[in-house]
Image (cartoon, rainbow, N blue to C red; front, side, top):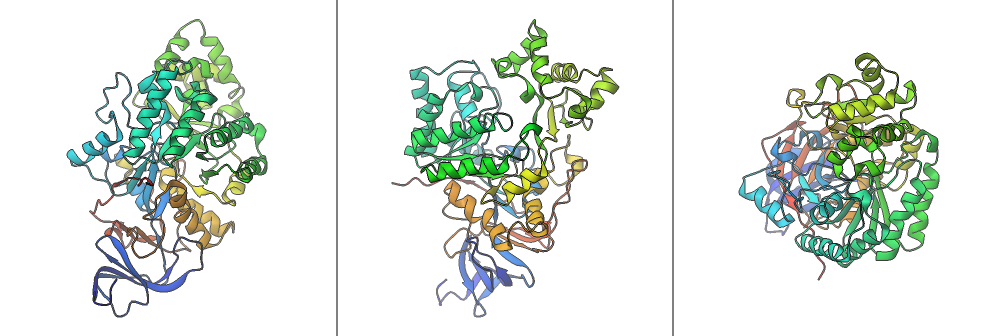
Length: 524
């Protein structure tokens, strides 16, 4: 801010400025003008049209959720309260191989589009708003479906070229890169050659390949190597999404998994990761089915369950649910309107009390049929020891969740609490378990993810950068959400500014909806 400029739009005074670089915090003021950070330091000479005291509070860059699935959540609810109350101002979306573009063959969803540019145009033309920024990846599963369909086969050379063309086009329009979902159809049908070739396109466009790996349990070692090979062969930056160990037989191996990532970096592969601070995951029940049964997607699975190969699927599921103890680890969270009585019950309860069986694998198959393979579950499958180990490393935080409303009455299902608490829980654990200091915790959710995803205009408090700012109490930031009552907003954040607009004031959301879709600027 020039000496002649005596007023700013906003001045935040007297807080401890933690700038997102990891450097020690310092007492100072921060000024915002025209949506941009204008000045930091002792700004007694300056007056703001709006002034806020941050005495006793930390002033940080707006937090970045490194792995989200909010994509089109603004259609249902534009508040993004589950994220905003944690101090999150930007989400990385389009993850796990799924994005709203390019449109799938025969898809009638009004929020699926042929391209990223058309998606952005619709957001603007339809008068949509959202409280929190999003930066988008292209989903490999969506891309493959658009070009090949849901068939279990390798891409032809012509199909691979078409996938590369569409990927390049949307990266030119501002997407960050490509997300893989290698545990889901149709992404799981891709071979190493396909992934390497797409990685080369991402590298040419200076992007990133994020990956829900092919295994996060029994085959974790080979899954890490598959992702590393994409980086090795293509030169692309690769990134493991929601890093975890989700099978009890591999619990305790977090140090070896992290060492494999560090070894890849020593070999010249840029390999990063995010994780979330919970010992339960959440996805569809169909993830417990054998890969071959997903040929043809959800409809293909249902055909198999109704046909002569049903028992083969049941035996595949039995690897996970072979006794009552294992069946207790599966909690149904959403039925997508197909069988509401199961929501809030474990697989054991559904099997024994509703289906009157102790064959838990058979019960899971029956649930898949009755819910049209749409049932979502919370899976209690990770160990606290592994979770804390990953959180203690140089890793960023991704919720793997959604921007959701703050009122339970607006929700028709029980989401995983990570949507309402992942970043807040990280700060609580960092504080109580002494995983790292406050400056490092802030860096992990600001400067670090900004660097990983190429967000050059935010993630730090610095003049000239976008005014995404979170003011919070470092001693109080924590989640309220639990597995049984997940729709509860986090506490400890006092003020949030998104693109220069006051989105949360005195711990309560305002009417501002200043979020926008961020486009990555290509290096020329």
